[in-house]
Amino acid sequence: MPTPLPSDWSDRLALDRAHVWHPFTQMQVHEADPPVPVVGGEGCDLLLANGERVLDGISSWWTCLHGHGHPRLVSALERQAAKLDHVMFAGFTHEPALELVARLRPKLPPNLTRAFFSDNGSTAVEVALKMAFQAQLQRGEKGRDRFGALRGGYHGDTLGAVGVGELENFMTGLFRPLLLNCERLDVPEDPRRDLAPDLTHWPERLDAARQSIRAFFATHGERLAAFIAEPLLQCAGGMRMWPPELLQELRAQCDAHGVYLVLDEVATGFGRTGTFLASEQAGVAPDLLCLSKGLTGGTLPLSLTWGTEEIYGHFWGEPSSGRAFLHGHSYTANPAACAVACASLALFDDQPVLANAAALHGAMVDAFTALAGHPAVRRARVLGTIGACQLVDPATGEAHPPEARFGWRLHRRALDRGLLVRPIGDCLYLMPPLNTPPKRIREAADTLGDLLAG
Ligand SMILES: Cc1ncc(COP(=O)(O)O)c(C=O)c1O
Image (tube, rainbow, N blue to C red; front, side, top):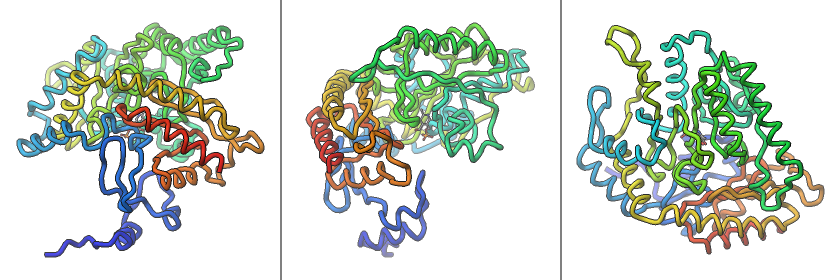
């Protein structure tokens, strides 16, 4: 029986155009610029159907940690798929899930003792929100019917996660009638991450931000089940790097007001910011921690929501007590995904993954220092392995108007030059796999410099 897939890529793209609906995409765009066919992945590169190689400068939506097709991850996947592909996780357990918990636990704050598996970043957040709300109810706190979140945050696309994302954002605005109650708090960006920092009145500005966190909790603290934040770095909000001192203040205020602190390390976890978790840099341990993306090294979807013994205790009781956490997904703790996650964590133990991340940090500082000299670039900044800057029209010094679709055009032009970047609005950033050779980052900066000049 012949395969129904046409052999020629132009016919395959016709199939895509006829039947496929891509994520985060106004599909009309693909009439002029069809999706780019990818046929392979090798280290920090993606291999395109036209024979070109492109540097995966954004780790395929911040997932790929150790490069594509890492042999240790591939062989873990093959071995596990041959042994046990999947089994429901209600009433059953298996070796890869237990090994994953045993490997990850010592790398996390010691108060996080209970792991709940799900499938992706959004579901890890949904689980955390539902757990926090139910735990508050079951400890007798009945009036906590809302959440707190940072302005400019992004926590995923399911309705609960959208509800704690940025309200003014077009997605949240559209779905507002369907969303849960959320109070939002502004935090300033951290000028110390800028490569040319303006530290004028910084101690006063930091103190004012602390005061506004206290005022926020004085107003809303009694009604909040939990406060959720992406520690140190709001990624999809435009690579906003914010001060660790304010995360410490959030922790203190959550404690003072009986509010659970949820840290969403879906994007920042696993070495991206230079430490295993970003929150380590503030010395802050959350009550609930969301992990995904890099959890499997970027190979398969999987996520974990870690909670404390205190939270777990509020769900404990007789089967008839109605206290259980009644949430789960068909593929919860998929064994193949867990096995790849174990292989990825093993690399942290026996390879210099964080040392590579430190070398990448140095390369990022050099690259963005070079880009910062360009008249089209403002506010170059670096946190760990992530470099970012704002793009402006050099003639006016203002951001490009959205209808110019400058970011999209830069993305397509960069692909032709062997580089995958995908600006978020006017924020251009690089977040490549942790073992990307520094030389490739220098080349990427040269390419971007050329494209911005052209
Ligand atoms: C901080 C953060 N939380 C949650 C999510 C949602 O993850 P997923 O796309 O896997 O649902 C993302 C995705 O980018 C994210 O950056």
